[in-house]
Length: 154
Image 1 (tube, rainbow, N blue to C red):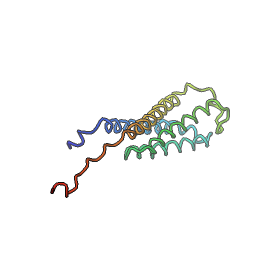
Image 2 (tube, rainbow, N blue to C red):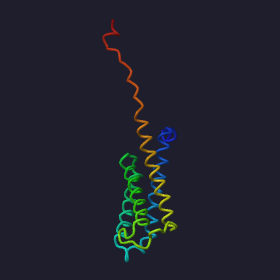
Image 3 (cartoon, helix red, strand yellow):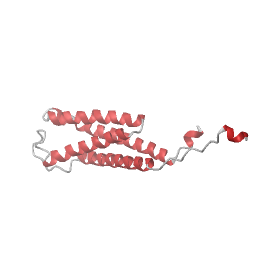
């Protein structure tokens, strides 16, 4: 138990980042679950995208809880960037994925919540990538030299 209490600041920061990332991914999935019913019927491609975001957020969130790895953080950041890109495209490109009604609709409350969560995930993934490269750049201390057995005899 003492070992858990004596965690290094880097380990503590990683645990906090993973917890925040997992909650953010769960939030992103929940936002898309709430908005899903309106997209399944009239906009099947957007609905399929929502289902993909929901499934990926659940899987990546579970992986993030299990362990911290650069590929898991890359997946979290990539998922958030892809979801954000889809939001921006449906607001700017008329008819993207068959969605004509959302062009110029930048004040959608669920959309603003999703953009906020996605921004948080992208920033967390970037911070984790940066912190992993800076901690790996520190050279390891060389092992102490052992004296050969014959030098102690003489």
